[in-house]
Length: 203
Image 1: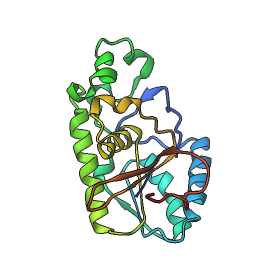
Image 2: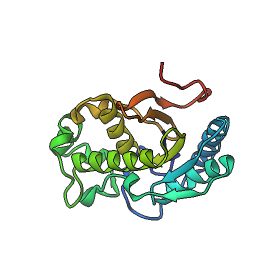
Image 3: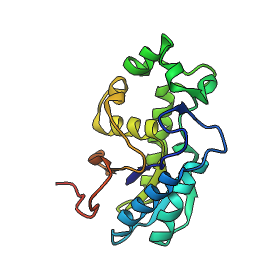
Image 4: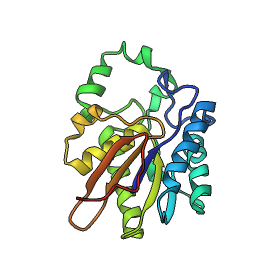
């Protein structure tokens, strides 16, 4: 399974947009989406593409879907974390809060005020990926999501505690590849932004 983070938006790195509607890709994000679509298109067969319901993920998925001749399937389990009252807040303001240290150092014990906990997000995301994997045994599929859910999925696949997931980097329109099988997941690459994807395979 290829996990693709959405492309850059006007607020990337500046605010915590969360699930607020109406956020679209910036021009740079559109270019990133076209570039990742070209990378995915080099694969011989991609059987399906799924995306979070938010505009930025569906806009990232659109050129991929066109390149592989598939229609985008919306999967709510791929949604961004529900940041609750923090939604739309500038990151530089959030960094001043005492809770920010908990977000970075003890995320498994944190719940966003009025929103979701990181543990709930990870359970939701891994459940959605398991459902998709079960529906596409032995097939290559794409899932377009968000940074934190993808990082949480990587941590789960690696058997790494959620409290360490902030050490994982997932850049806009990067590709993370995880092979899901009956003997457990195998992480093939994380945060890949260039180069061919056809060489990815369990060793």
